Length: 383
Image 1 (cartoon, rainbow, N blue to C red):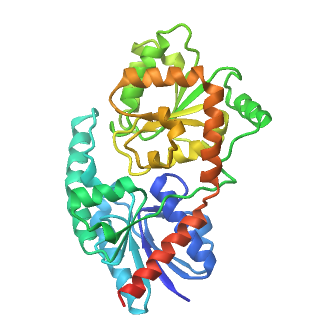
Image 2 (image 1 turned 30 degrees about the vertical axis):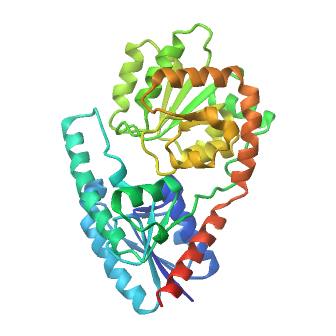
Image 3 (image 1 turned 45 degrees about the horizontal axis):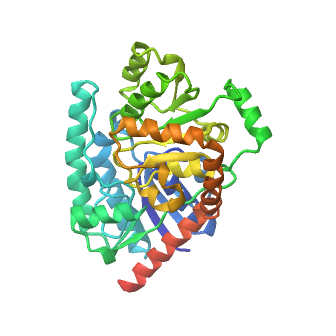
């Protein structure tokens, strides 16, 4: 029985990197391998498997930053035991200083977060960014194998951290096709009834944290103001996510007199259901190593407008080029793209279907199998 140690904050099904790490751990466990997990949280279905061992790291003051020294120590401590028996260790970015396999989901050197929340919140983000930058650089320089989630991420590692390109391997995220799929007309009608959405009114969805400006909600908000000034614009915006800036945007919606056209849902656990009931997703993100939320929307049959610089944009064929936003700060252009989408909504849906089918044919197990192949190849290469 082969042993693997995976080190990441959370092995759960919410969030991009958390979902991906869950998928890899689940795949290894179902293969019958011995799986050790250093984390703050692990989903119950993983813990229920007898060959999975959870090495829990307390989350100090509910803060990833304050917990990071203890997290790094626990990861290195468990890594020593696993490698003594011939096992392999996979860490994420700079979360643990261990030079084996490093799976990079986000490059801190590629983006510095900006926030308009309180000064204390801004100071915390600034300190976190500096610390994570140093840990990231150190961990990647010692890695034997580096796996990334997009070619965008690979370029960032080469350009910003001077990592040799031949050391980096791109493996795209997978999907659960039983969870994310286009709804039938009857299912969609029933879902919209359950959610209280008017059947004939188009619904545009934004999914993302509102703790800073990385996800570009400020650009979408300005675009939505422009659109709502048009008497012919009949779509509503649904916002899924929470964060320090959520109260600010709720207040601004009231001040701009568009509160009835923007529905803030906060954190939701029924995202697949929301996507199947919606019509379009917008992600004007300023930095996105990949963009699993966009991937999930496409698999659900939605037209998804996303920044052309996001990693997931690599998956778009040329026919869907109008869904790629050239400038995350250009609210007027975003509004124009949304108008064009609304005018050609049926045509857009047909073009998305082909990409949706392709993405749903590449599952989380397909992704995990590719990663395992790279781990084994790295082991053979390094003796």
